[in-house]
Structure formats: C-alpha cells, structure tokens
Figure 1 (cartoon, rainbow, N blue to C red):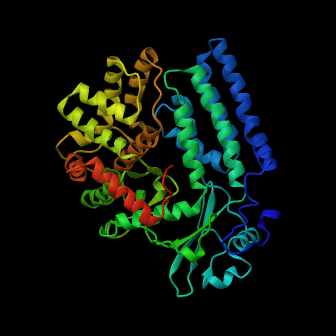
Figure 2 (figure 1 turned 180 degrees about the vertical axis):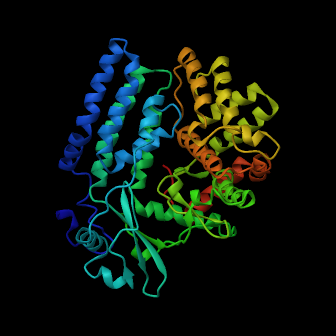
Figure 3 (figure 1 turned 30 degrees about the vertical axis):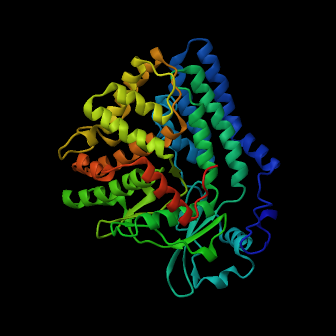
Length: 461
C-alpha cells in the first residue's frame, strides 16, 4: 500500500496518512450498511410505538458492529460503560463486543516500521519479535529489546486510523441520534463531542508519550505504581516505544488473600484519585487490560491514550459535592453541579442528581472498612441507581451532562468495578480524605500547569 512506502525517519508518512476521502467513504460503507438499517428500523418502531423492539435492535447492532475492527469497536465498548449514554439493552449488547483485532502479518509490520523509522529500522533493535504480543482496536504491540538488551514494548498503529475514526464517529452520531429520538431524557450531544475529542487524541502517540512522562513524574516517589519509560528516539506520532513492564492480569489475583487483594486495590485507588485531586488528571479508560499486577502487589499502568485533563474548577466541584453530601447541604450541592457545568437546574433535578451522586460517593462517605458496593456484582454495579435516576429524568429532563462529566463518571464506575472484581475491603473514606486533604484549586492550577509543561503535554487552547 502506498502509505507504507519508505519515508524519512520520524515523519511516519503521516502527511500521506492524513484523513483521505476515499478511505472514509470505504469505512462509511462498511459501518453504515449495518447501522443505517438499524437506525431506520428504530425510527419506524418508535413512530409505531413499538418500544419493545429495543432488545432485538440492540442485538442486531452488536452483530453489525461485531464484524468490524478499528475505532468503532473501541467506541462501542466505551459508550457501553457510560451510564445511560445509550439504552440499557444497547449497552448490554455492546459491552460484549471484543476489542481485539487480528494482528498485522510480518510483511505488513515491516512496511509500517520502515515508514515510521526509515529503511534501517531493524538495526535499531537488538531483537524484535515478529508475532504481536497483543492486538487491539487501534494498533498492536510487539516485544523487542534495545541495543543494550533492555526489554521493550513497541506499539504500532494500524494504517488509515484517522479516516476510520472520522467515519466511525459519524456512525456513532447516528446511534446517539436514535437514542435522543427514542428517549430524550439525556441529551447525548456533549457525550458525543467528548468521545470524539478523546478518541482523536488517542491517535497521536506523541501525545500519549507526553501523558506517560506526566504520570511517571507524578508517581516517581510511589513504588506501588510503575509507568513505562518512553524511548524517545524510537517514538513517532504512530509508533510508541517504551520499556516492557512484567506483570500478570489483575483478574488472576482474585483468589489471593484479602490482604493481598487489598494492597492491589489501594494502589489502584492511589493511581486514579491522586492524579485527579492534585493535578486534575485521570486515567480515563477503566479496561482491565490497561493494568497488570506485579508479585509485590504493585501495579503497572500500561495505556495512556485516554487521559482526561480537567480544569481546576471542575475538580473543585467534585470536592465541593463530596462536602455537600457529607453535610447534607443542598445549596452547596447545587453550586457544585454548576462548577461542573450543569445548567438550568431546578430543585427537583438537583435531588435526582444527588441520588446518582450519593451512589458514586457512597464508599467515600462511609467511614468504615467495606466493599465498594455491598452485595452488588460487577455486572450490576450502578445499573439499579442509573435506572431510577433515568426514570425521574424522563419526567423532569432533558438534562445535558457537561463534557467533563462523561469520563469522570465512566472512570469512577470502571474503578469501582475493579474493586468489585478484586473483592477488596477498604476504608475508602480514609483513603479519599488523604487525597483531598488541604485541597486548594489555585494551588492545583499552578501544579497542573507546571506538570503539563514539564511533561510536554499540549495545553488546551
């Protein structure tokens, strides 16, 4: 393929890989054939009052998307983890999609690597395994070794991902428009905009490398949390080379002692809440494959494509809402929601949002050792509460969740699911209060700007 022809080292042929119209039309045809037909049937069912068709159409949607690879798979799994982004039947079916894609073969990999690092790319590694160690929706990872023998992970992006992302997001807009017509309680337009921005960022491996440097600096003094080291001279916009971190899947520790599982959970809590409360940053993808566990029960954070950076005012709103719920202060809660970006909130809507907030904050408010959700399994975590809130929003809405809320909510649910999988029992109240002790938004603002600048993370306009 022409986009795999040799190009100057570091350039990655990315000018030729810029969003090409032909590639987009090809992708539109692949995705649109399935999604478009389902959209038409959904609109007809709604027009005729056949709401019971939701489950069948959800299964059809999973079947239509299941034969495709690339970003649409990542998007489908992503929206399945955002409470009430799509109807429950759709979320249940989409959550079953597999993100793994068939790996590229060796001849193809060689062309891709030559496009990124130049004709002599193999001489820059001591070894480079031909078979991919892992393959996912946007790229695949190969094990390698540096010239001095250090083990490396080499993440190589599939071709034409920019075209695929734009085409797939267009079809996601169709899915969300179905939801708005069938159930207007939640206006999904800001959710759509947020997913689009984050997914496009994931295509930029130079940005991901900067995120990795940021997290390495944040946790430089915490031995529980390991971050891969970026190999700068072997990294481009579509190729990310980093140190290989040995560890085992998190779920393989479910049968260990409670004390050992709790140690893993404490490290996970710190890895998520400490960057948020002190730097306004979260690891926004709660997929279990993005963590591995070491024998000392520390964790490796492995993927930095989906990092969300929040304005200090939003972080202040999260802390304020916690204080409001702690003291049962309704006016303070209303002010916190306004910090988040909710608009035109009536007293009734504030009460409905507080139901969801009390669920999210419940382990943090309860000063005792407990599981994150007593008696609730990972597959049901949050569903009952989301259903009750959604029922009330049908009567009082529509509500437009602010963009920043999307990945905050998604990551919090994902983290809770990790704790449930581990069966951890901790005093989450104590752990959380340690992270927000002496919180000050102005200090966070200074700390965040300094850390982002040091890591080379692009600052928001």
